[in-house]
Image (tube, rainbow, N blue to C red; front, top):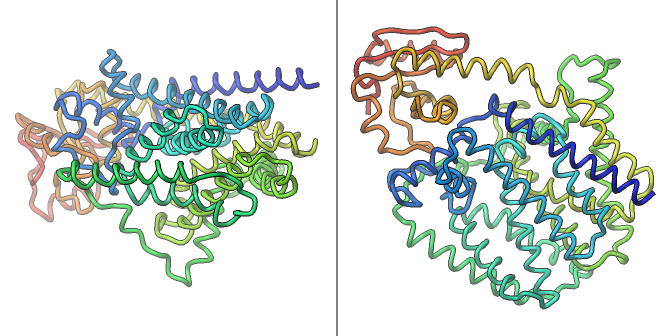
Length: 514
């Protein structure tokens, strides 16, 4: 049974890889957004300006990207890759690295092959469209997951007194990179989860942490010096740091919506008016059952078998859940999502590093799970295959890809190669067209045509509109844009082109006002 199960798990893993490559190559370019495209854009700016921190670049949310997606994007760009291919190779290579590093860590702490495969399957299974977009498509918070694994691996090396120089290097470098990027995020995503298990479960966490703490504090000090003294010239636009607590009377609904977002992440949240007796309805209900097991089984079996677990297994499980409840608690109590259920569903990505760690804990505890729990974990993978058509959203993707290609071709046919658009409709076309069309962000709060300062470069606006330009507006913004043009007496376009979801305004002169 053991060899047959391993063969089945390897087959599932191979299928997951196949779907991952297919999704990145053919589907995600429809959902590719400006946040995902910014790694390509920043990489190009770094290469052109010859500086890893371009002085004209506007960072946001207090995040000074230090070691992130753009780092790999620079390498692939210099190797000769272009446009969306840079994104594809960046995301796939780092995702595969994350899986490899997960297996290395679990091997180091003594987890058997079956458990490792279960962990890798939990991370790579296509649970929902959102899981695909955020974890496998945009590939943002998986960097935090891999960094946490780096800390855990280094900590394990120190416990075993193995490769202490490598352990010190990992702790110092991870701390330096992520403190320099954003000290607040570092405190929430790393410091709090790393030490919460020692506070909450100190009688069960029998680990020596003095050396680890010493290296961590040294890396923290280096990171603070690097950010506040060496990088003091950086331009930063405010954003997420202006998060507020939710009014108390709105809190119950807000928390409930956050749970809705969590179910959406696992593919266990059905849409309005989903028929009960239907393939979609039944599969979603079964996914709900499996999601509950995937999430809560490690807690039950971890407590039940705590004395049989190795110290580092207990620590990893405690860290994963401590981190999850810290992030989920902050998300539920604050205004990180303020636009109702839709925002709660779509912004739940902040929990990604610790949801992935919970998948790792399922691998650690696989040896203790009952046959029923094991069956439900494997059944959840089968459910993902049964619902693969709705998860991939191929029909929607084909339509959006066609619309985007139509926009690019229309601009090129009209000789419009340098222009502007609201942030979410700017960088995507620059990357997808391989810079044949350069679209820079506009501030779109009041439609006054002001240069964008959100993940953009101030140097662009000195040269973009020379000798004519254009503004690209999505359909939902056309009416307020045209109203603002009249209200503020802004320059009128010489020509307009209406497409299915966009309207293009062509100008003889630069249309922005600042």
